Length: 61
Image: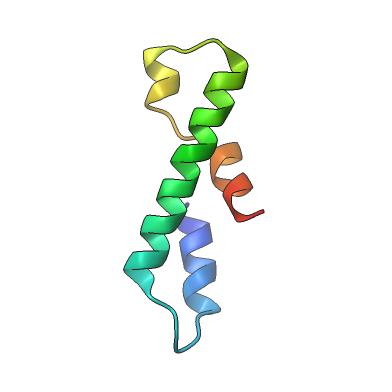
């Protein structure tokens, strides 16, 4: 997540809204996490509270 944010800051333009962008990325990441958990069928307390690199990287596609 930190690398993704740093990359966005480096490539920002005058329309870049940092807080809004981070919120949107976080919400999309949670959506992807939920979809992955639903497809996997194995839901544990740890999986509910862990955001993986897969969840983060797939939100930009």
